[in-house]
Image (cartoon, rainbow, N blue to C red):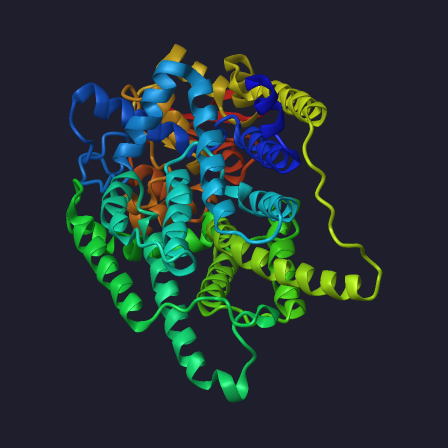
Amino acid sequence: MRVQRLLLWLGTRRLAVAILFVSLFAMAVRAPADTDTWWHLQAGRVTLESGRILQTDLFSHTCYGAHWINHSWLSQVILYWLFDHFSYAGLGLWMGTVVAVAFAFVYLQMESDVFTRAFIVVLAAATSGVIWSARPQLFSFLLTAVVAYLLYLFKWQQINRLWLLPPLFVLWVNLHAGYALGFIILLGFVAGEVLNNLLVLVAPPFLPPIGGDRGGEDPVVGWKGIGMVILFSLLSALLLVLNPNTTQMWIYPFQTARIQILQQFIQEWQSPDFHHLYTQPFIWMLLATLAAVGLSGRRVDGSDLVLTCGLAYAALLAGRNIAPFALVAAPTLSRHVAAVLQRWGGVARERGWLSAPCHRAPTPALGAVNWGLLVLIVALAGVKVHLPLRPAFNEALQQESLPVGAIEWIRDNLPQGRMFNHYNWGGYLIWRLWPDYRVFVDGRTYLYGDEILHDYVEIQAAGPHCGELLDEYEVSFVVTKAGDALGVVLGCTPGWRLVYEDVMAVIYVRVE
């Protein structure tokens, strides 16, 4: 009997959900290709080995000893512990788990049948995949989904779990500065519910029911509920001081956003380039949402409207906001797709184009087939995730994208003095060469600020003041990409000698 119950339990719908999340997990397991991962790992190592949270720069010679707002210290400890104990498999499995759990919270907010939900979740996953990397911002991805889910419970299920928000934000502010996304979700929700309440006042003469064909079933959070959300949001904001940087974290996201160099030269802070295929799922999801809202005959909910439009606007300004857009747009899209299917399905059945749905009772034979399919999918997912978890695969990937050979030359020949390095390689150089060498710059843009980063750009572009700045910063050797402007100019400049070259990198050393 127990075996029979197990066979009957895995019906077609449960099989579809299982395949969805196994596939999401397999999609998200990747090799750590982002170079920022490496300085996060080094910072986590220093924190664990010293027993103190790292708040002073140790990794660069341009800001050495300066105060560093290390907002991701807890994430760094977690990532380094995983890497130290499980190597690349630890990071890869962590990415897969975080993404799958985030989309579990998204799935729970959605309407429509299992298969439609699964299709929308896959679209949202393809949209958000641009930020899936072994970095602390993936924690922000997960916690953004959690905040949205808590608000969904409060509004759509009348279950009040808002008391979880303050401890959630205390955890978040120690994991990553992306906690600002949580407050954006809360602010958008409040604005949307205020809009809902105002529309209720004018709905009878001017507007269709909130639920469209469903007769106005969509709930509206009353003024008392809005006040409760505001109260817990303010309490969460006050508790942000419970971190090593205390009150500095109240303004850190605003200060970071004001760094001009971010929008000018850092890709994730720039508007997306939609000529690349990996950014185009954002367009598909945005257009699908617009089409579904237009065809559903269901008035769009105020909080859905504000959050979806607000994060779409943010995503058009900076590519890093595409992932939060996908998290909030998926439930909105599902609600209107459900209305479209209900509306058109009813019309089709009335006209005899479509028969009423027939639900076949599960049988042990069908259950056995479903279990066999699930085992097969899990096995295929295991084959897919095995490759990026292997150290040999990761090391080969680093050979193709990072200055591995140049680093080996430095470790063997030990050039003296200060290094200038390409920005994209700073994190990896910290991982491989610190404490013997300190970098010029790396991904910690807030630490360096506009002045040092503008100097970096001037040097890297071999601008007219390049030589003066190299002298000013007392740079003794340069590690940069093969064939770029800086290498070409140094090759023609007296006082510099090429000592290493491969297809990836060149090293120039200052000579007397």
